[in-house]
Amino acid sequence: MAGFFVAVNPHAEIPATVVSDNFAKNLSGKSGQGLTDAIRKEFKPVKTVGVIGLTFDIQDHFTGDEVKIADGNMPEGYVSGEIVPHEWWTYFDLDGGDEISRDLNNFIPLIADHKSRKGDLLPGVVETPSFSTPLWSVGRGRIYGKETDVYSPPDKMRGRIARTFFYVAVMYPIDIFTPRGYNMMDTEYPYFSVYGKELLVRWDKENPVTPEEMAWEEYVSGVQGGGNPFVRYAGLSDYIWGDKSGEVYSPGDEPVPLHSTYRASEEKVYLISPHIPADAAWKIDGVSVQSTVHGTAELGAGNHHLEYVSESTGETGRLMIRIER
Image 1 (cartoon, rainbow, N blue to C red):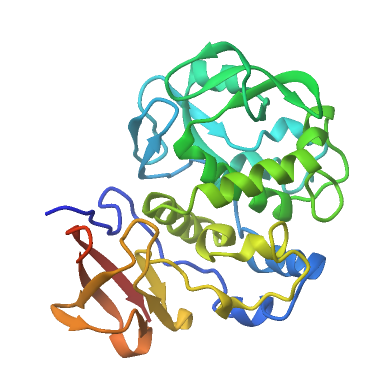
Image 2 (image 1 turned 60 degrees about the horizontal axis):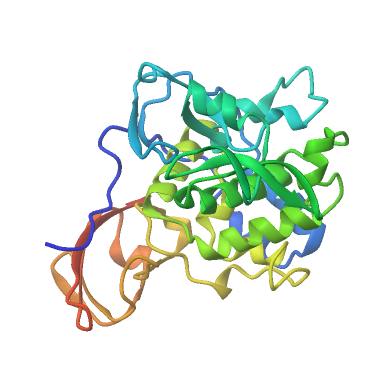
């Protein structure tokens, strides 16, 4: 059977999330810095523990390999890496510690050599490589017309990189950056330089959230008490950095693509995904349905098996969702 199967990662223990069920209420009607302040209040992690106790199978897109992490132990040669380098910040709350490097929303597994080469470089377009593989490269690129050291990340990482930068910029605003950090970030709303905003908004739009990224977000939201809203809520970033910048946020404007776990408070399940043809015909628990929108109360708590077939492409697939009480 063609297509794909989406379910809770059988190698990952995903705890129940504790992200507030009042998300829509607390963000709806806000705009600008008021919206980012509300996001920070709603999604600030309760705790950040890094890879301690982490059990998850996660893809290393820098090598193309799957990395199996069990109880915080990574395969030989792997180390804990970051998407947004903590070295860009020159000050941290001594009570909270260096939370950025412990925040799993910012975590990626890297082999030691790749972590060293990536270092605290800016993401961008490498024009003159000093190191390259078929998946990524390090070298010289241009920012504001000047040559500087950058790295070009794997294509499959660019969407997650953008949405992680969005999350970190909102969650960890701070007064002091290193010069390299200032090339990408800003201390004032909307928290990015011109270069950073243009690059990340483009990567976000060109690379929609994948089932893999959504599964990771769900795991992290359970472990830390706060996930990445720019992954879970499609279109949210547009109200801060994109086409709707400055407009009042309304959660009902954009349907949320299919993901593995729903809360009853989300109210609706949309049978849509960037990875499934738009003309797909659906069955829910073996029963054909005409509508692409279904209430979580209508479906009921528990696991639900979805099937689809596209008349235009012949593609078929199955996936499973879970609705929590």
